[in-house]
Length: 454
Image 1 (tube, helix red, strand yellow):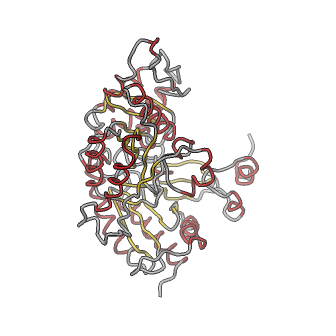
Image 2 (cartoon, helix red, strand yellow):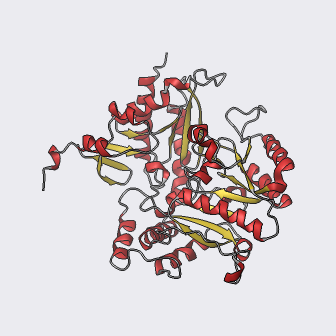
Image 3 (cartoon, one colour):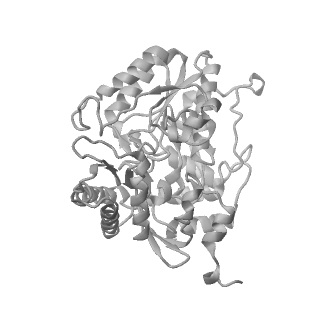
């Protein structure tokens, strides 16, 4: 075995690997951090430097890296069954997981279609809605609505119901022609309201879209309460309630994309719980397995399931599959996640930490002259950089100031990933207050280095 200390891992990485969501030329100045091990909220690279993973490794690590309980569940499962075809076969872990999820999803959701990543769950949801209407006498319903600034994945169907030009613009010729509804923007509200005093006046945009297009629309897909990739934009539960009513009145199905918001991220098990509404279809992934293994589920109502249930000769089956659907290892990890939720005071502790974090972020981050807002839901806290605090005027995007703050934070041992000029905390739900305090201190240090206060 070669001496690991003498191996140039960064160079070897760049020789072969094309990393996601990046301009690889940036890696000439900021090579990849090659992680050798992790524990809890901390990552340790091959050189021994540690990083506080305040973003849960793209929002999926729910209870810390190498969580002993999840580790044990996967170890036990791997000696029993690593994988089996999910068509006409099943496995104990998948059955137990479906039963566990049935106890926590919003009322009315009954059937669980297993996939292997978030985008795949969204693709399945879109196809289900299209085929549902086709098989229930409404072939005219072939389009989809989505919110502006929304994001639902990178595959073509999922990209088509997203509205972020950064991801989608150049692929327009490949994409479906969908209906984009102006989304709530509570930081720069065009109606002069705040989240605390509004009646979702902005919902008029949805009403206008439904008035024009409802009869041709199969479904509307939304990220409930939190548009993550738009810059952690948070909107009130009332918007969801109004949307649920409008869908009921028009026959448009409601897809709640809870891939990023599910499993406690917003302070409730699902973001829909804040509004006390149930969608027709829900997509879940990320925290589902605690960040251990790729898996997603598209959850539907009995009514949708029944529209596909017929003799084979009728051609109504949902012929959609993924090789690793129902993977027992991923299911075992997900079952361990559910066990942790049931046996630990996760929500109670996270609520205490969230309140404390809001106060500390207000004191240490919002006090900076170029931070326009600290917005939060659950343990998720985001701060937006602005050129002018009073007018909320943004910086020129070409300056890439969020990216510069990210780079400086990394130098200090904090993984604080930017979304444009928005930077965010989305930590494991069991992170400690001292760790959060460290993250705040390092974030403020990086912020002052990039944008010194007067």
